[in-house]
Each structure stands twice: as C-alpha cells, then as structure tokens.
Image 1 (cartoon, rainbow, N blue to C red):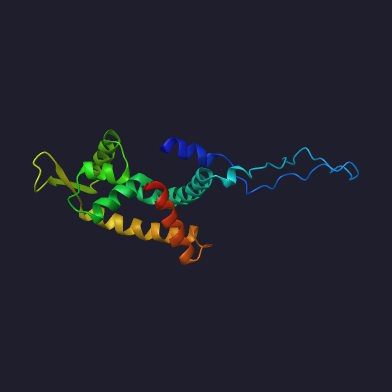
Image 2 (cartoon, rainbow, N blue to C red):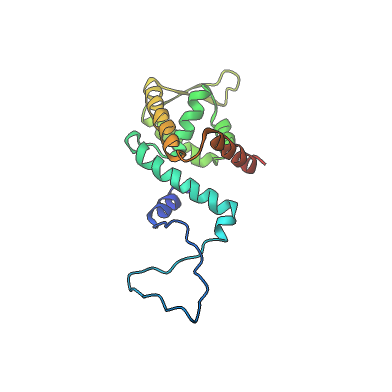
Length: 180
C-alpha cells in the first residue's frame, strides 16, 4: 500500500462493526427517524474476509505508528529499512529489497534520504566490488534504539486486548499467509 493510500485511508472515518438491520415487522411501530442518525451498515460479509480484516488491522496499527514515529521523521518503510540495516550490518540494497518486498527504484530514494539525514553509511562490500554495504551511523543507531522502543510500546498498546499467546498465534498465522 502506498503512503498516499494509507494517508487517504486514515482520513476516512471508520465505525465499529455494525450488525444487520432487523427484518421489518409490519406490526411493530416504525422507529423514530432522525435526520442526523446514520443508517446501520452491514459489513458482516466483509468481516469474513481475510484481506478486509488484515487491512483494517494494518490501518489501525499504522495510524498509531504514524503519530508516534512523527518525532523521529519515520514512516513504516523507513523504520523497516533501518531495522534491517541495524540487525544486518553490511546488508546490500538488493538484500533489503528482497527481504522487505520493495522495488529497487523505490529503495534508492529511501537510502538517499536516510544517508542525507546522517542515519546510514555506505561502505564497500567485502566480497562484491559492485555493491555497497549499508550500516547505521552513530546517529542512526541512537535514533533506531529510540524508535524501536517506541515501536515495541505501540505494539503492546495496540495489541493490548490480546494475550501474549494470542498475539504469537496471530503473527504466526499472518506469516503463513504472506510467506506462501
């Protein structure tokens, strides 16, 4: 999902689950109508779909992520790239693209931006003269540590209604879907 579509999705109001309207009963009095009352919307079928539920959950998490990561100037993809570099010093752009399913032209701009901010260093790759290994700078390490703590806390806050076992199960099931 592009950043623009996430931003657009975050602007749309989202209501909680609505139950289908009760069948009309000719003997029952008609409910009072109000010009300001919105009709009940049946989303029952949508809520049976994996994609719909995964998207709604992702939007809920991303909304919190965007607010909490704003002080760090990071979008979800920036955080993902920094995380891969932090945990894999010397990783190449090609490896990041494969790990995060990012198109190379999209990653080039991200790497340039992170490098310009002084968060990433490019060093010659030890075995491939054509590639550069990516490393976090000292500033990148500090920023990533703070952002990682924020991300860990927001995950706990967002998934607070799940037990640790339920959260592990949910993550395992989602991985089964995207790691076909």
